Image 1 (cartoon, rainbow, N blue to C red):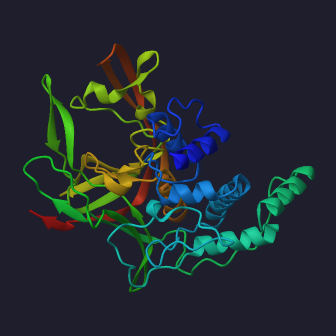
Image 2 (image 1 turned 135 degrees about the vertical axis):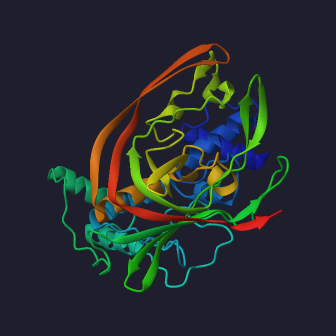
Image 3 (image 1 turned 90 degrees about the vertical axis):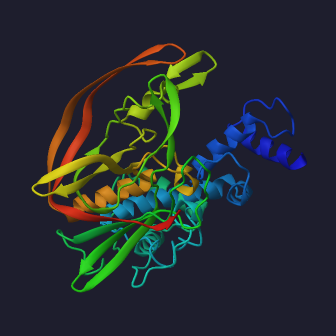
Length: 397
């Protein structure tokens, strides 16, 4: 109870916990506040007071702010350099100025060993070079550097970053594997915590070499509740295996809930009653498809078949560590945005703009809520599609 009181006081000081109805009790209000804290520290939001949360709580607020600044700098370095190689396919993400920018659960895929010939963490190296060039050593020096730039009204800074690998070109030969990890074909719903989780791996071809650039946690299908007439029943949702291609990607994609989606899943309960969970439909980082969605297409003779499977961002972050999807392959928002930026910088493409649709539905749960969606998102076509291989994984029967 003393430990919980200390955590509650910390969360209240951060403005994340307004009321403590049970002093020293691990209430749902405390769990929700911890989840908000986890999001601010880039920890998968479980609401559980685990080791990564305790480590982050032990940091000073200035130190956490400095780590956030390093994350922002890293994003700018990635955009400027066109790097994707973050070490996740090999030994793992390196530190930047001695700091780990994310807990391992957000990038290391359980049950996977380093891949042969994997690219090292070029992203962290370039970020550290940029930080040193700016004079950043800690929170105080970073703040002083930013204040000096602001006083001079400097908005852009030119830095000499490490040279990118020679295989980086404007038309890179990219390939993607989706390893489904452990797959159980149970006859009825059963909780399984896979020893080998699903992984998305991005490769670059350089002559005869196939270089793993990055490997990130993802999801595959499993048992999900669906609406069948007037009943809600569990149904198995498969992630089809075999060769596919990414030809189209959508920026700011919309999710059109199928008729089988229970209305209960499209609303949320508040102090004022139920309301429509509009962010799920997009565009939003909390949307079902996140900020970006790659469309999986299957080649059928001369036709391309869209099976409804996507690789996309997600607001359901904990599913990447323990959960399943409806068949799609989810990614952390920062990963899918990073991947889309990398693909568009290194592959020829055509921007087609917003693609219109007409979706109408009345959600009836705790009220009647009309849904109207008129765009699928901003469609971009890769003129040379990227081959994707969905691997069977380790099948258990």
